[in-house]
Structure formats: C-alpha cells, structure tokens
Length: 204
Image 1 (cartoon, one colour):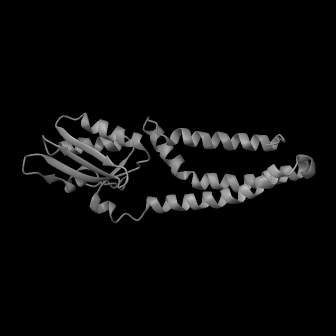
Image 2: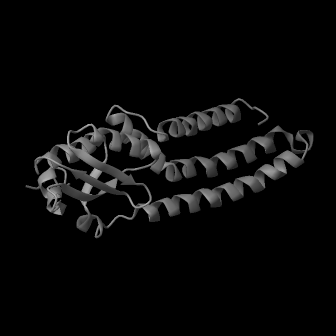
Image 3: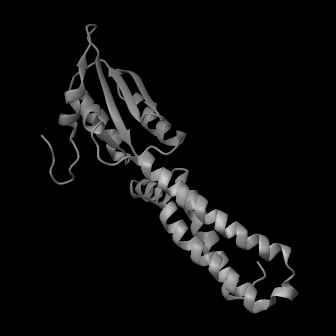
C-alpha cells in the first residue's frame, strides 16, 4: 500500500518491479535518488550484502540504478529496500522514475551555469584589483570592489551550492556523512572569512 504521508512508494509498491527467476532467486531493478559520491554507493552495497541470501547488490552511479538479487523469501526485499531508505536515499520502481517531473541533471546544469557566470565577472574585478597598486585605488575604491564581488558571490553560493547543502543536510539527518558535508562546511566558512576580511578592511 502507498503511504500518502510522504508521497513515496512504500516497499510493497517497490516490489511490483520484482522478477521471479527460474532458478529460484529474486531480482529487483530500482532507481535510487540522492547519490552524490562513491561513498554513497559503498554504504548502500555494504548494507545490502549484509542481508542473508543476497547474491548481488550493485549501484550504478551514472544511471542511479540498483540491481539486487537474492535467494530466500520474496518479502525479504521489503527489508532491503527499507534499509536503503533509512540511509537517506529514495528508492522507486523504474517505471515511476522514468516519468518523474524533476530532472536532477538539469538542476545541476543550471547551478554550474550560474556559478560560471558569476566566476567570470568576479575574475574581471579581481584582475583589476591585483594588477593595480593599492596606493592608486585607495581604500575606499578597494572596499567598493570587494563589496561588489561579495554581492555577486554570496547569492551564487546560496543558489549553486544547493546540491551540496541539500545532500549534506540529508546525510546528517540520518546520522551519517558524505563528501558534501566538508564541501558545504568549506563554502560557509570561506564565505564568512571573506566577509569578515571586507568588514575589517583586510587587503584581500
């Protein structure tokens, strides 16, 4: 039965994608959402292979697909799928994933485009700051251009950093870490340090 509280198919729904093999084994092909790095794949595969009877548990990072094969009870698939969800990932049958309205790749492309545009503009300002003597520009002009750079950078970090922030928050919520946790921390700390330098009249 589907659980209307979260809009996500429950394990019983997911097992509609199960295939009963002629040799007595069961096989599932599912779409996994929330993958960000090799560590995510290792956590999922390690957790699934810990179940008795599992012969194969492989996650393809590029396609986001999980191939699961085991011997035992058909209902064992419920516990396996739930274990993946408890790690903070979404699991859906491939037929549902194929018609999903959200395209993560499109969102990532937009984030990269915004970050690239902002980087180009900040580099133009930085070239002027680094090739002109501070005695020529004066502290007022230096401060102005630093704040202009900050006005471009901060909204860009908020928008383009969302994939990292969301992934890090999801990982921490389930009591685990991934590579996006230190990335998010570095973004926040570097931004805070830069703003502090501007406010205190630092040369860089």
